[in-house]
Length: 329
Image (cartoon, rainbow, N blue to C red):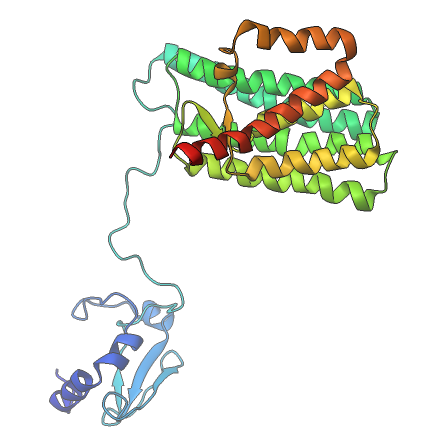
């Protein structure tokens, strides 16, 4: 049976449409369908006081089962969800497509085995990163920790090469690789460096420098995931290369002042988030043979100085290429 004054309240609701839209935040339900009594008990009863629609009245939430005079209040039961703070989904809830396959394409046994091998390399890199942390902090074996970091670099390069070679590259594998890189290169590498420098400098100096490596590694990996890929250059020094430099520096143990070592750590961290173009390793191998022989010869003369010169030359190459590109643009 229609409520008394229905036409009058309908006109008021039309005039106060903005308020009605704010109150009716849930999906409309079929008011002609039967409603169970226990369902009404669990709902909050929303009402509009007389004049709320057209003259700035207020919406009132009453207790379940509370009754109001029909002439003064307009019931909105079944028009507002039980929890207005949680919006209802805009459309029907999907029942399919929630289970995204980790390996797109053909799901044969052979491809699954190859997929497992590739991701096993990624997980091996992650596990070796954790091992480096444990060896450095618990056992104090810095040489073994540095070797674990170098093994992380090897497995990191191996999983990508195998994924392309075996044709099992996937978005899941890319995300797994980034998470493993953050663990091995963004966390394990600075932890090992912090332990190395702990005996030579105060933690108030070494801790911020190593924390900066972790922060810049996270930014670098996130930016790499969302940026277009360039087959020739990196935008900033990759985290893998920074971790390799830190690990080799731990093994070589260059006889340099601790202040210079901390400055080198900070410089490597900032180089990761820079926008300077750095040549990829595959292009470096295409340099003239005499250029590649020079570091080998220098290693026999003084490997510590040669290591520092090679790292510094690569860091400087980014700004040089950036200036060159701007001059020729």
